[in-house]
Length: 289
Image (cartoon, rainbow, N blue to C red; front, side):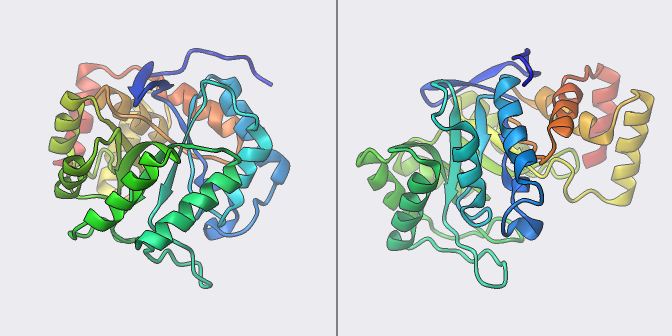
């Protein structure tokens, strides 16, 4: 197992804990289409242990990954959890027999999901629960009062330490904050899809983390070409440049790139530490234009 090394991006205070800005997302540990067990069980265990050995203290998961599979792998690989390890999960959806991701945000649904997360992770309290909103196409404008208030009630019962929202509009973020404090927002965001720029700035001023997913998702061929050109000039991969740009973008951005390979994890860590010049950043910023 590798020894702890300094991770790119430093740290961020997430709720009452200091976590590495470079984290790990467990979604890819499940089988194809995020259903069933991993192709290589031992490799999945190894990458989780490698992540912690490398100094990663923020791991993102969800009971829907598998379902149950990724949480159970985290438990097998890392339990009993190190005192500094922070595990974030999600509630607000289920998996159906076709592998879909239907919403499940009624109070009874959410209570059952919290119980499932507690059980599969093997803990008495969850560090962070994001209320998963919207659908597979992105955020959907709708009221979230009942669902978020249910999670607040579970937090008051001592089952959840911190709350966040995922796949949310800026208005839904504000609505959640009007009900109870949140420590994070988890939305799709990257070089090519920057509709949350204003939200990121506001959250940074408030000390709230922003956790982007799909760092290479939704690029057009032209945008991918520009990214690849910059990466080629820097002798780096497009993923490395995309991750490094996110760390440069704002200090409240926390990364959760996923992989089922320990070697790829090491590549992601090294890539995110890439130094981008002001000229590099200016060229990359034009991708979203």
